[in-house]
Image 1: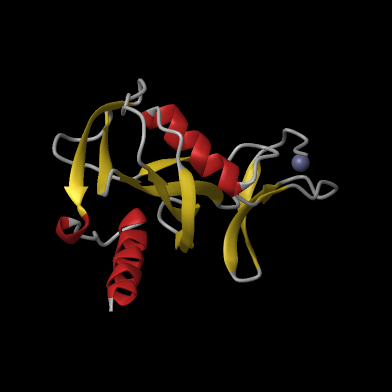
Image 2: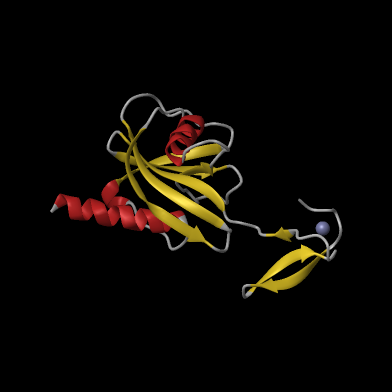
Length: 159
Ligand SMILES: [Zn+2]
């Protein structure tokens, strides 16, 4: 807990940290990475990419969301897909974990599938598109690395 005094920068184990200026207080602002779940959603044999209202036009991405307290990432990813797309999905595989130092997040990426139901976007999203697997192109940052790794496994499984 913080005593409320000012913080100053101090190196701890080789990294700059914000620590309390009071000598009797051991508060350190660790800024630990925040876990985020991400889903490659397969819907009727196509991949759903969604556009967040706050993003520039033309940018589409995976379904993502924060892990909540007491929640397992497996539950969190299905909850996010339900909330954002209105789909009841099932997990096909855990793709991997990706550290985004820039965003200070730990990304946990899944492949989920849903063949039934209608897509219904929640308030965070204003558009989506369906892409054939073979037309899905990975991007260089964050969730794009999960897309890259997943596409690789898809190619391997086909042979
Ligand atoms: Zn303090």
